[in-house]
Image (cartoon, rainbow, N blue to C red; front, side, top):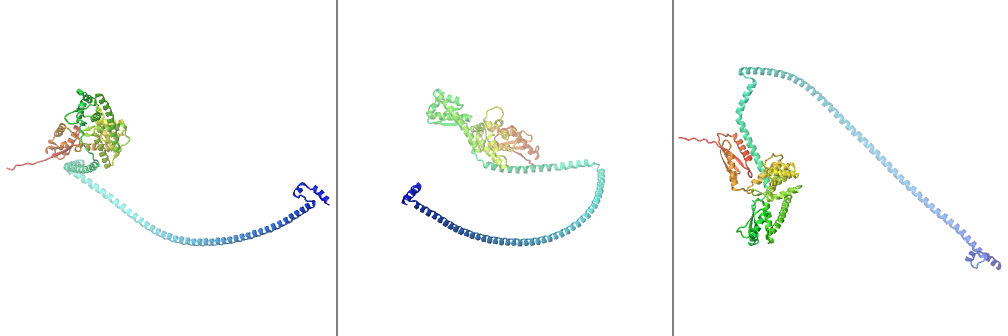
Length: 540
C-alpha cells in the first residue's frame, strides 16, 4: 500500500507537488473534495443572501414608489383644487365685469339719448334762426334797393348843384380845386416850415441825447493814458569824459555816428547827457540803443559804431515784432498776416501831432469795439479795423494818402472787404459800406480830439483859426465869424435881413460841408450860427 501511494505520488503533476509537498494521492483527493464542497456551499449561501438582499431592495423600492405615487396624487389633488378655485374666481370676475359693462352701457345709452334730445332741440333752434335770418336778409335787400334809389337821387341832386355852382362861379371843378390848393399852400407854407424845424430839432435833440449816452458808455470803458512823444531823446552817460570819446579825434566818431544812424547828436553843457534829435522815431530809437551799447562797452570808433549799429537794428526790429504780437494778444485779434503784425509794431515808433500812433490805434480799436457792443454791431470786426486803420502811416509811398495806402496794403494781405472799406473810409474819402466803418471814423475822431492827445505848432494853430473864419465869412449873409475853443468851435453871425429862420439851418450845414472839404484838422469843429433881430427907436 505504501508502495502504491508512492507510485501514485510519483505520477502527480508538478504543481500539486509544489503546493502539496509530501502529500499522497488520497490526501490530494480529500483536499479537492473539501474545496469543491466549500465552493458549492458558498455559492448557495451567496445566492441565498443575494436573493434576500434583492427582495429587500425591491420591497423598499416598491415602498418608495408607493410613497411617491401617493405624494403625486396628493399634489395633483391640491393643484386640481387650486385650478377649480381659480376657475371659480375667474368666472365670478367675468360675471361682475359683465354686469359692470352692462351698467356702463346702459348709462352711456341714457347719456346718448340725452345728447340726441339736446341736439334735436338745438337743430330746431338753428332752423328757427335760419328762418329769421332769411327774413332779415330779404328785408335788407329791400332796404338796399331803397338806398340805391336814394343814392341815385342824391347823385342827381349833386350834379345839378355842381352845374349851378359852375354857372354862378364861372369856373370848372379843376380850376376851383387848383385855386383852393394854391390858397391853402400859401397859408400853410410858413406853418409847414415851422413844423419841419420843430421836428428837426426834436429829432436832433433825441439823437444827440442817445449818441451822447452811447459815446459816454464807450469812452467810460476805455481809459488810455496820453502823452506827447518828443522828437528828441536824452541819453545818459556814465561820466563827462565819455562826451570826448563820442566826439572822437577831430570829430570823426560823431560824424560817423550821425552819417550811419541819420540822427543829429547834440552835445551841450548838460552834465553827463547827450541829446539825439530826429523826426523818425525808429532811427532815433536805433541810435539810442547804439549809443547806450557803445557807452557800456567803452570802445568808440567808426568800426565799433557800425558793429553796434547792426546789433541795435536787429534788437529794434525784434522789439517791433514783439510790440505787434503783444498788441494782437491784448485785443484778442487772431489769424493776421505776419507782415501786418510787424507794421502794427512799427506804429509804436510813429507819431501824429505828437500822439503815438500805436496807442492811438489801440484806443480806436477799444472805442470801436465798445461802440459796436452798444449798437449791436460786429465787435471783433470793429476792433480789427480800428487797429489797422492807420497802418498806411508807416508805408513809405507817394501814391495817395495814408487811408488809401492802408486799404491797399490790407487788401494785399487778404483782409476782408469790410476791413478794407473801414480803413479807406475812416477820413470819409470813400463812402461807408458797413456800420463798423462809421464806428471806426467816429472812434478815430474821439481819440484824436481828446484833450491833450495831440498838439500842433503855433503857426499851424493860428493858420487853422484864420482858415475857419475865412471860410465862414465867404458865405452870403454872414456878417462876422469868430473861432473859439482852440479852433474846435466857430461862432457865425448872420444878417437877419438876408437870412431868415428857415434858411439859417441850411446855411449852417453848408458852412460845415465847406470846412470838411477844404480843411484838415484834428478832432471836430462845431459851427454855431446866430441870427439876432434888434429893433431900436429913439424917443425925442
